[in-house]
Image (tube, rainbow, N blue to C red; front, side, top):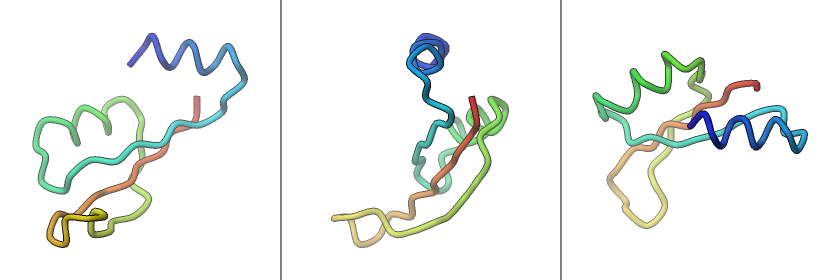
Length: 59
C-alpha cells in the first residue's frame, strides 16, 4: 500500500478509494487504521448478495 500511495502522491493524486466486503474482519480494521473513512455501502455488482463498503482517504 505504501508503494502505491507514494506513487500516487508523486503524480498528483489527492485521494484514494477502495472497496471491502462487509464483514471482512481483517481488511476493514486495517484500512480504517490507515485512515480510510467509510463513505457508503451497496450490493456488489454481479453478486446480488454481497455487501460492499466504499472507503476514501486523502493522501
